[in-house]
Length: 96
Image (cartoon, rainbow, N blue to C red; front, side, top):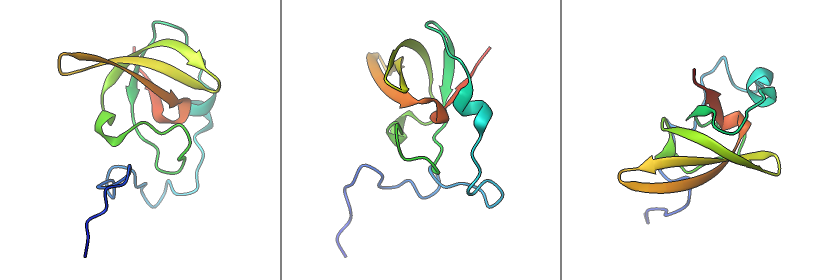
């Protein structure tokens, strides 16, 4: 059997949700007001495919630099390289 090379390959455990969380919408996470300069953690929610960042950014911390439609623009450091990610608020968690 040929191995797939899609954008979500290898995400069986990363993008899956627990049995109690399936079908549940976390409204506080969706409605949280973010401002520029806020620190956020990228935590992928497999129940919402729109605005989902790539799985390699799961668990990373970034800074909000702007807004793009319903999504937020994040600046992160991937090794020594600065990267820009566009993700919706369902996949973000605020940090203090």
